[in-house]
Image (cartoon, rainbow, N blue to C red; front, side, top):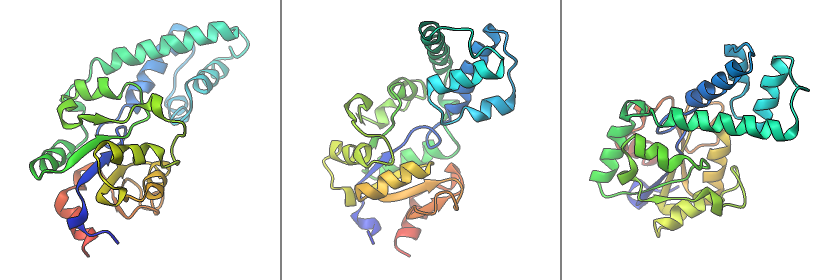
Length: 224
């Protein structure tokens, strides 16, 4: 098992770890549904989480009884409109959207000389970091366009360590999803999971929420 003293860098997922953009995606879909006179519900919004853009659109159209009302080209335009709505939501973000405790954690990492990189599949990640005023914390960001495999494949975390010129065993990966934890583990890094301990059982350590993620708590678990 890796010792705390061996760790030189941290590779972060973005959504669910540093901020929560799922709310913004929900708002963007809600706006599209309203424009199509489709009744929005919390149940529908929850059903879209983790679903691709086109599959989400199909679910919304089906919920409104309009599954056969649009051509493929028209559906592409609707999906583009949703993304436009989402970008507008992202542009409203401020540092207040940083999840509890995470800014203090990042400050602690930087103060103690740890290197940081971002391993998010979102093409909007740099924009989100800019709005959160955290871009300076992450000079190294994995380019999603450079990836050939998604999580749970380790590629994104392997690249996150390589950007820091560190070996995987010198890095801790931070995730909130089981697929992300699997990617960290497969990359040979130490995995920190944030969320449900059962869902994230494969992680080297799990914290129930972002506020519990501190250097002291990570050290205690690694060197226990």
